[in-house]
Image 1: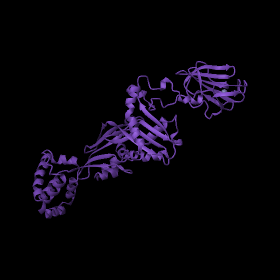
Image 2: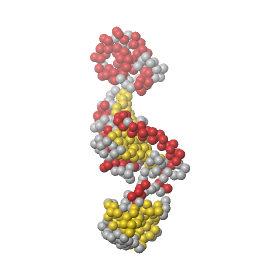
Image 3: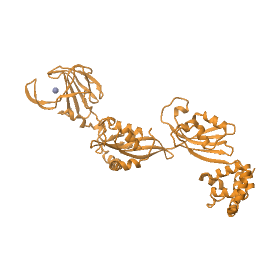
Image 4: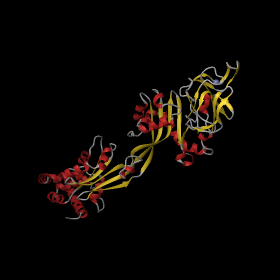
Length: 483
Ligand SMILES: [Zn+2]
């Protein structure tokens, strides 16, 4: 049997000669078709192969651009037809094919599409979990194969997500690593190798207008489910995007897409987002001070943290019965400043600290009755009064939302309620304005303003473009599968 390279070199000369006789060779071709129907089919398949094999077929000589595989092979059969077919009979022809997985694919359907007909291979590989994961992954994954002329698989390649734990035989968990799986026939069995694939990050934009649900608007904008979930968390302190977004509200998002070989595998971080809820825009820009992702957070374009430090209220459903400000005090019987707000609360209602802090006072005080005072970083203090019972002690650290007491009717109180005060550096402030106050720990770090502006300028521009023309960008945004 001639070596493959000399075989092809010879073929090339023959095929080149054959081109000159193109128009007279029809009868010969028909004759060959009768004598060698199977080989002709293989040769036609060969002729239809990809550009990858074109380079291989012409090697090792200088590639002749006039000799595309398609033209060359069809002419060869028409001239020196019998010898040609005999040569093909002697030579194990390997077909290189690539296919894309589709929904509902099985290992068998995928392999058959690649030209594998050997029943043993089809049976063996259908039982192989890693090969199954090739077709079990998202539809549209490229799989390439080398199959010989008898339908035997030589080699198979595709991308698989391998979880570290799975490789060690453990359970699922952790970020998968993307690898190229290469399955090679050793004649008696199969050998597998895994080559790591580099993940790349692309930036994508999605925008849309809510017509039905946010979810359906997000899907039609090609926005992955995990991006919608991130939006919900980013704006959680300002708006419940699943519940509060209405028909006509708009959204625009700049986010990362992690790709392997140009194919999206999952969405990454939201870099910028805007939601316009009943005409009110809410914006979020991701910024990592000093380039440290661990310090990263979402900020408004002005550089304020998007995350509230103070809860809206120390009670889950507190209705304000007496606001902050000047009022006639029914107890002292004169007009004076009401230094807090009164929330309606049945005796025994759990009271929560509105922010992280340290208990300054937990006990009795004239007028207040049972009272808890908590100091918060940045010169803030909150006061919870007329309590029926206290569940913290002075000096104790508390966290936002931690239960500290039960509401009551102690001290100068005309009925069960919670009196709540908010102090900023020693001055009483309307507690209903508490959310506007940002302790230094949640503001942009000192000296980071210039780099914040530089880093977020592009994001702001992208966001403005996206939100300026939602329909166009929504349709232009690359479509990806939800993850
Ligand atoms: Zn009060």
